Length: 181
Length: 181
Image 1 (cartoon, each protein chain N blue to C red):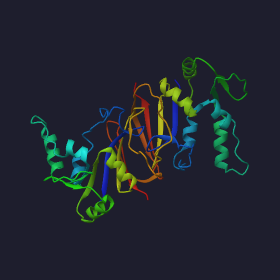
Image 2: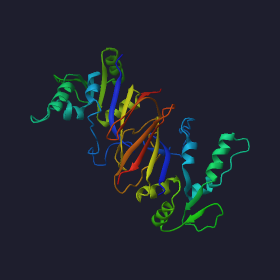
Image 3: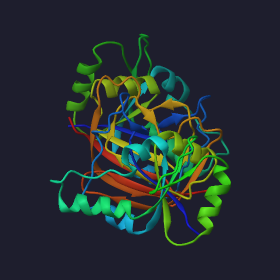
Image 4: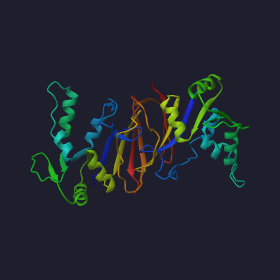
């Protein structure tokens, strides 16, 4: 059964963006093995805004070979977009209704795992409906004081089970949890 | 030179208390070596409310020997209380004014380190004035969704430098940072 993986950066005070959408504090260490993460998934879940911004993004021609390769890997995945819009799109399947049932069907297809890409409102929907199997949270060594919280409008406490930690040379600590419910 | 140590538990979403002051999510693992922490300090900084609640607390007669010993260790420390109140107290020195200068003087006395006990408003004052040397943050495997944030009313971003991590069997991960400014 496929698992739904959330993989993102948060500040020590729990924000995924600053008060004006700032993500400039976000570190990409070369020891973070993002390639390894990508090689373990075959499916990506997007919200509609994130899909329009990044779902078919092509890097600049002068981008590094590593960056080109990363985007090729991303675009080789099977893509689903959760949206109130109906749209035919040759590169993605749009899902408009019955999120829980559709996610359950996709998970049963087997194969590699699913990356829950975001944005924030799709992540909140997935957290609230207990649809995330693995939380990979990269805690950055900074506090912003305000911003957009990862865990927003929780209906109840979310209990997690720590399964692994990775410490990167930048001081980022990745905490990997499974849902404990 | 003495260092000022903050040592506390936060949730994965950055809260030190739930919306109604709840701390029932807070885990005391027996592998956390709180005794070791206490043996490295000789001074405790309290806010006035915390001091009145805990500064001279005596455990119940039927408390375990470990708990009795812990409180004996706490009460053997040199205590300072930061307060707008003037008070003569045989067990503590009250500091009413010139916090930055007074903290600086105490740090220069040498010896072991200083535990910044809290409460929240004293911690905020210390963070805002960059008076904390070491942050020992025990990230608990839970999100509350709302509560009292550790980092509140920051005037600017707080950049930290990771120096150590400790993973406990409960799933608590202790992140130890120094101030990076």
